[in-house]
Length: 412
Image 1 (cartoon, rainbow, N blue to C red):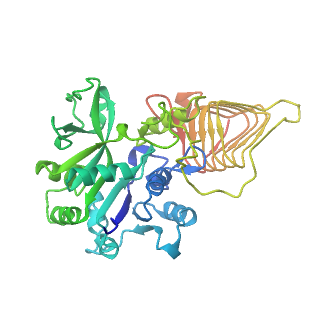
Image 2 (cartoon, one colour):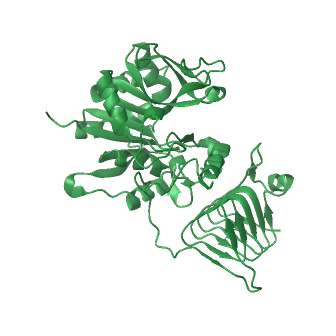
Image 3 (cartoon, rainbow, N blue to C red):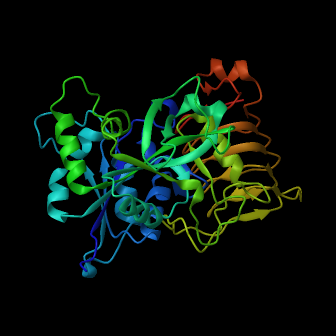
């Protein structure tokens, strides 16, 4: 029997408006996460760990740092015909950019023609999770349906944040797909949960090609995979679902096996970081049997030393990246990105820093996200006085998270 050819497409052209200002200078999938990772690393790692070796990343919005990260990080064996490559919008169908995720695939069908796969796996690039796509592909093939949607169980009270799947009572066919319903129908086997679409799909190649071509001819379409393509399959009774929470991952525990987080807002992005730093984390970055890969920076190990007054550095319940230097500072429940410097008497509490952040002596940072190369001068504060932060022009969420844009210098 001929081997099934599988092609992976990562949709990474999103602007990520709800993550502003973290996306003011970069694409959403390029936003740093968990110290040394980028959001896109989770999607690609899942595909690679699942055995996929022919993967394209469709990019568009402010894609320079994303393209650079992919080119510097993701190298497979060209001798074996393996590749992961970013593909920018090429205007193959006229002088226009991608108008939606389905249009991105329509304008990239030359890649499908070159690869000639039997099955196409389409995934988003901005979720944090572990998933074995081989199990979903096996489920897709067994169903005999042309399209399969990955679904994750979510609390019924969160249904208005997702596309909700109503499964058929006697099969894995999707009966209805509801967009952010306010009065959802819970699952029959658990009245506290609904099935939410994860934005990951498996298609028979011809079915996907035909669907995006038909969608491209419509003037009333937003040309979106979740909003237009999948509903078209559902309306014909040709879309099934795969329950992600029933899958297994090597090295996973019951606590983190079903973890999935949409980090599309500042609050959810911040909360996902807090999930990482518990003694028994809800999402475990240290699962070596299903690793999350990223670029390994050529930096010195992190170091915690006394200051000139012999004050000890203290780092508690935190993740610390390569190149971090703490000199007599105090760090609690924080995630420090590469080359973060914390000076004498400074205090970081529930904070997230990106690459090259500098925290001056005696400065205080609380419940804040500091983008790349932010400098907090000695004695200055962030996240302590909400009104002051707003007057400075910082983003402050309703829940009290302060976000400081890249290259900002903060004075006392």
